[in-house]
Image (tube, rainbow, N blue to C red):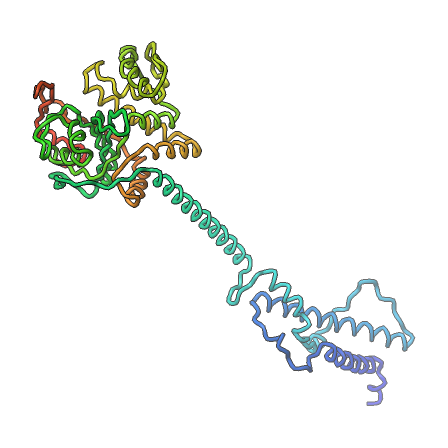
Length: 449
């Protein structure tokens, strides 16, 4: 037994064991394992954080043990007089028994590191993938910002619409005599576009232009139907006469009643434009490019001479020496082109020219910049009179917005082979086959066979 106690290796082992127990006790006091856990320890950690803490504990315990071991080993060897120079940076690999005696330090030692890791990953309870959370948060922020921008744009658009609508002259519909129509469809909206030849604001005049604009949501078409002024029709409570005289006898209400009674089509809303309003609208668009023949250019002289008189222009203003394909015209010249009656097939070709001008105006408006379009709409809305309410105009604005992409079709009433020339009260008229006219409207506008 005595031999075993004198064994240097045994003595060293005992010394090392005491040293280890002493250093381990000090380490426990330093790490606070004997202290009760505080509120700061009560915290939820992700799986990644817990793994990091456990790894840090193991590394710290390993380093503490190794440092204490090396310190005591060097001190003991120094007392025994047998110091040995240790290579710089050399590190003793602990034995299996050493590893068994390791003690985990308190998690509070690593709270700061864990907190930094937690904050950097922006972790929420129940979430383990911080990077994915950041990506999701960024995407959500982008779409939220995009949504806000879209809402602001829509609101501004609404404000602009109400601004334009407020400039339109809205009047109440007077007494109607005929409102029941033979042809109707909820998918079709009819608006009668009226162009008057009145030269003064207080003058009723006659309706040189009567175009029924029909928006068909089912067929995705907009049909422009010209109603010829010389159609000989029944005028409610006024006997018979030319279609354009209905407006002179009873205003827009009587004109709508006359169209409904003779052609069986429902007409409740109208837009009215005078000579001078037409000129201002074309000028607001910056003029139009029209294909004009030499004969048409010379024929425009007579209507333009009359227009210059009422506009106060110098004689000869805006006359054309010849035509062109195309030729750029202003409002005064465009009106003369639309009114031109004595070139070609009289009133038949005049309705064609009117539809050409309207289609050219639509295309020009679609090509304008935002600022140009704003100026055009402001100038145009001031020149329009309608019986649509503010709410109806608001809905109509959106209908027209969607209809901008529809196909456009043109129609003339009466169609070919549905009329013959007549004379009534000394006036030349177009006597109609009303059944054929109604059938054409039903097929072309309402798509009914």
